[in-house]
Length: 98
Image (cartoon, rainbow, N blue to C red; front, side):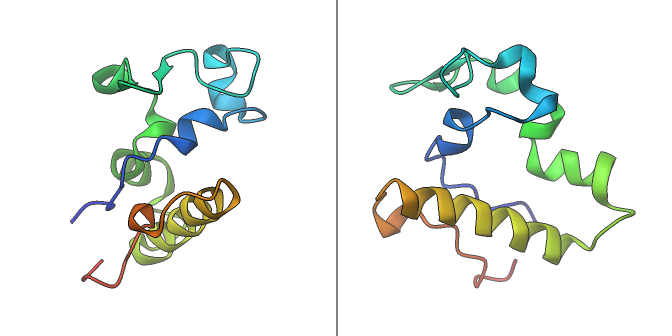
């Protein structure tokens, strides 16, 4: 089981104020390693906070259940998408067994 990320890229474009990502901030709220056309340019080496499943295992598994963790992440994703008028096809859907 893994988080059903739709790769919309909005989380990479809204990192301002996230302490763990301060060194990646480009000054305009976006990650300096994010390309609108290519996505994450350091995907295989991206920070732990950007790795939903691995981040859960290493940082949050003792604090919250996986289902709740996925639900909170999905809420943030879907909220960002709605604010930016992204098409519904990008919404994270947890109803398929996650």
